[in-house]
Length: 161
Image (tube, rainbow, N blue to C red; front, side):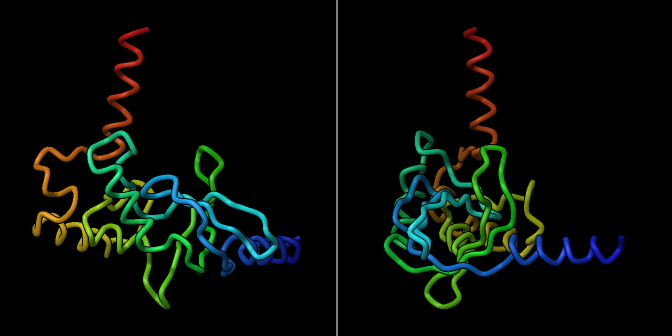
């Protein structure tokens, strides 16, 4: 029984955490992209460790543009780390040899370290540095996190109903 369990865990970890390559063909928003895989299939990837402003939120378009400037049309390496509640693949994307996309977004001030789902505490340091320099969304002293923005939209919908 243990042998079957170990084999199953080994197989799952290789499938879930294996390194894959593809070309970024669409930027949906600051933290969601579409990749074209070698078998010509497309997959939507939600970036791990970061949460960017929504498209309709202040700095949402800026975050999308930043992500586009970094990876659109590029061949990247990524690791699947799970699925989100919308069934999108959560992934860590690397480009230009060793740049980690989520880290670059946070360093530039176009996203929050998504501490609710990330154990990468190093990203808090980059967020604090961007905030201290008033980079990107941190130029707005009333910057609202995407999770607070989404919660306020849900609350308004309930009030209207």
